[in-house]
Image (tube, rainbow, N blue to C red; front, side, top):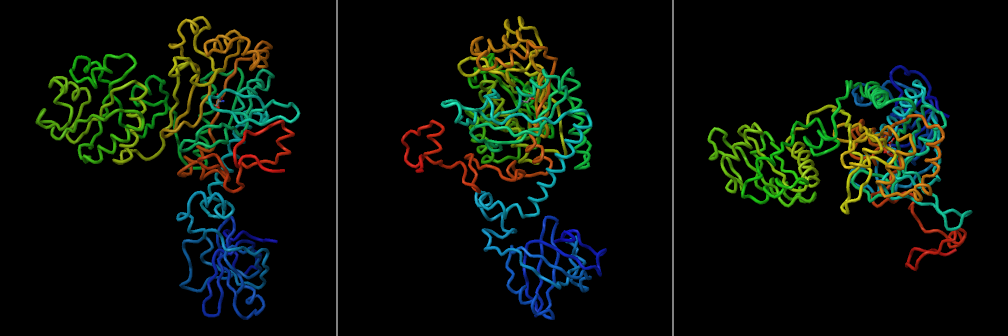
Length: 593
Ligand code: ASP
């Protein structure tokens, strides 16, 4: 049907007869001549209909936006003065000889160039229109090309692409499962995989040695800003490699992708321990494009009368930190009030600050609601430790460590963005030496990564002091976003049971839930490890898109629904009966046969 894509035509084709297929982007009638911008995946091309060919012209008069047509015509140079330098095909036009209307279109829900004025819900409901926009096409094309490079890289490095089941058992990655009722096993359910974690480990036990999969994962979480209930991972697992080897393969892959697709050299990725990242940035995924850092000052505050600081300074579970922001003295009272409200979202009860208006003027040169509560020499020591300069503002966080880290960590990002202190470019790093566990509010241990992650100590040391134990996990972070993470896995049943015990999963429950894994671990399990990257996030970062929904063809909304298909939806009573499911009385949930 087609000889060329619209966007590929240029001066080189002048004098040729071409066939184009595409959508009517715009029709303009100009003094007896009709111009149609014809659009396809590759771009636009101007088509001219002149009245000499009466039939074709009459047909062209009926064209409306988004009609699908086929045009056969002659490529010719545009008349002087009408060349459009912004368009690859802007120097030529196609004089139509034939026009075939392949499909008519109702008036679209929104014109392609008006997408910004409609809600995201409308864009998602009419995704077939939204995806016609060049920006969306470009992103999906970019995604496709990156996936292709990833496959090639992993294939070149001996990885096998192996599919794992979607209907499976729950895998504990810390989220709620999506469940699928089984018809053939009444009352029983499959879970959709939160990741292929256990299958990829079993593949290592089976001797596959190197596995990868571009895999769909499902997590029924309350959707925070940039999460999707189903998302895509580049999932990798290897045998007989240690952390250094796995990180090198993964780092190299990301480096190559950036080089090839963005012409960016990411260089060698620095490494930082989890402890250092938390201490300096309050985050396990620090954005290293920002220079602002936490400075601990609890030791200086232990003796002050100011309870807000002295309390946390004397509590081992708390932190007192200062964040020096160069140039921040120019912030207005209102801006500081806004920041105070902002840290409140993260549980901070307030936001203390000192403006350094004139360092040379000593205490007189400072402006702050809190210095009156502090001895002058303590204030001075704080200024010295932070090496402040005139024009700085210092923000303080004093609370339980978790709250300080979250609140001041978020403030660090926000202030830097507001004051233009985020350096351009890319800042990758590896975060290593994570703790094995964290404690929840009830004091129970939870895995920081997942329960199959190997500790860097013996089972005995792990049982003795689980709070101190570090894991052999690693995360790749880019510009403050966790791109991927993984670990060396446990390959001994005793160690696996030790971890399960600490997590409160006794032997019986472990057998019931993970018996197949424990059996595999006792059946000749090689040392193995791997990691998984979030493909959607990677593409979002690389394309500069504002959310992962912009790089997924058919994303879900914040409430985990699909406006295009109206999923999830009610099902017929017959289907429920077959599945042995009876809905609780709830108006509107059950439907009729
Ligand atoms: N399965 C892990 C995750 O989804 C990644 C890994 O450990 O390889 O985060």
